[in-house]
Structures are given as C-alpha cells and as structure tokens.
Image (cartoon, rainbow, N blue to C red):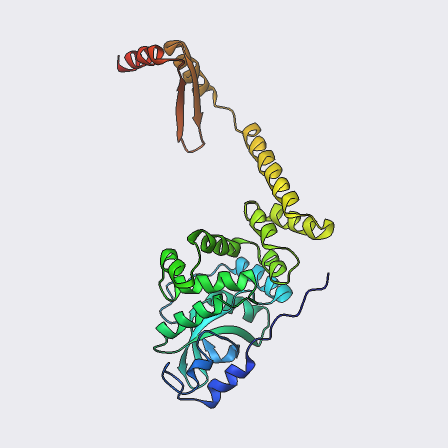
Length: 296
C-alpha cells in the first residue's frame, strides 16, 4: 500500500518571520499565523540553548538517530523561540537538531514560540487536537507539548480538550513506539489498535519484526494482540529457564533453611547480592510454628 503524502511543512511561515523582523510578541501583527504551527527553518538560522542542562550527547546514539532521520525524516519537530531577526534558539529537541546536521539536512521542522505566547499556544494546541484530520501521532505530540511547554497535567488536559484521562494516556504511549512504527501509523500503514498492541513489546527488535509482519500479512488487531501475548509468555518462560543457579555456598544455606524450618523455602539471589527468601506455609497453625522458630 502506497503511503499517502504528508502535509508540507510551513516554509511560508519561515518567510513570514523573516519579512516581519519585529514579530516577537503574541500581540504583534501576524503572530496568530505563527503560534501553534510548524515552520521549516534553515538549520543555519538555529542556535543551541546556552542554558541547556544536557551537555553530553552520545555520539553512537546520535549517528543512529541521524540514520533514522535520513530514512524517515524528522518525526517530531523541535521547538524554538525567536532570538533576533532570522535567528532562533532551541527550547527542546537539541538531540534531533544535532542528528539532523549529521544527516546533512539543510532545514528542519520546528514549532516557533514567541516571547509571550503561552496562553495563545495553549489555545492553539487545544484547538489543533480537536481537528478531525490529525493523525494519532500528531495528536500525541500536541498532548506532549501541552505537558512540556504549557505545564498542564493530564487531569487539566482532560478538562481542556474534553477527553478522558485514559484516552490522553493512550495517545502519549504511542510516542514510545519505534520511529519506523510511528511513521507507519502516520502513513496509515497500521491502525491505532495495532500500535497499542505493539507498545506492549519491550524488545525493540521484536517490536519491529512484528510490525513488519503486520504489514506483510495484513494482520488484524486481534491477531497482533494474540501474537504479542504469545511473545511475552515466551519471553517469560525463557527468563525463568535462564535463571542462573545458586552458587554452592547459597545452595547449602537454602537446604539448611528448609531443614531447620521443615517447610518449602525458595532463595533467590542476583550477582550483586540482592535477593529474597520465600517461605511457604499451608495454614495458620504452620504460620505460628514458623514464627516461633524465626523468633528463637
């Protein structure tokens, strides 16, 4: 199935900002055309935030993200604020910005913030969420921006947009999917039901493999849910089988405990010395007996 064309990012918005060098406030003329929208900005016009708390960026992870950007483009736009005529400062998304430069991009999609647009941004995002043509990832990103940039709780968002809190949570969880799967959801290669089932797979490779199987075999949501359940059960059994045996020293302690307490005892210990002891009893009388033994 051919992927539908996505909406073009707003190159015209970037031109609008350059033509209106004094456009700095939410009260300025044409500000309403900028707030809450996405513009395609030249990377050369963007600068890092000098107050960015994150100072170390993993080079290997950046290269991996750059490869993903080359293949799929920018899934989530960065957020910037005006820092002067034709200049913008990153508010969030510096990692994506750095990876885009590594990928050789000359421009990048960005949400543009003005100096005093907090309330207008909130209204624009809430209005944006109500639009029927938004794809699920766009809705999720709008919810995320309301949390990160407008400091709204999920409860407050629920009131603002008239949605149940559980609905908001389910949308936000979609952003945990691999970028390839997010792109597939945006391009209607899979449905939201498929995506919600895939979220439950913690292993990234397994998540991608099942996603590709969904497309190749046109699996239903029910089939994906069943495949996810079997995969998780298989991993659970594998984990149980691969549990490392206790060292001989702790095996002796285990046997001594069972013998002393005359009860079923399970002793688990990891390589860092952390663990637990589980004692099984059949009735209240046996519990009392065990408590007496442990006190002495």
